[in-house]
Figure 1: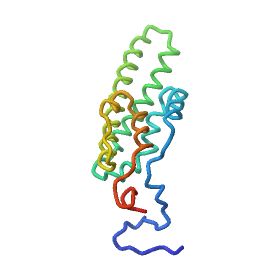
Figure 2: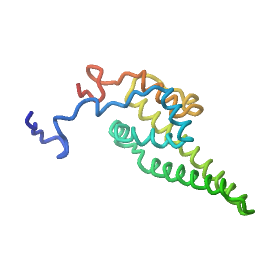
Figure 3: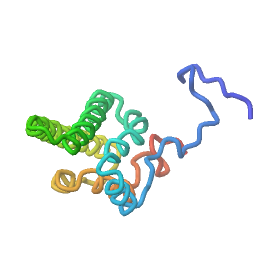
Figure 4: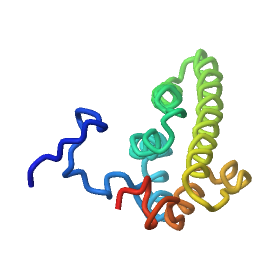
Length: 163
């Protein structure tokens, strides 16, 4: 198929882009719970990373990149500090435990901030309401549950009218 020239599209736009590339992935919540448990919580930033491009595309004014970079750094830091506390038998291990707790709390707060950013983006693009209580207590698990069930706004039932 030949490339369609459209002066109103960005130079990197390709006519061969499938509409599925614009859709949020529908994944079983049980799979996400399993992956989160198996990776000791490290799947949470991965969940945001895997949906970052489409979420940024759905809401151009509300980019997740800065928050997400901070979340990845905090989760990585918490993991490294946790390993350090586990192998440290020295008295300074209590100091490491304190900093592990600080990084853990900061990463949980940033996860909440990102979850509410995703909630706001979904509410801008989908007609259903998304519970703030569900987002607060269940985070990515509740958001994925809603993503699996929501139908996009727009003509012919498609995101951004691409179909």
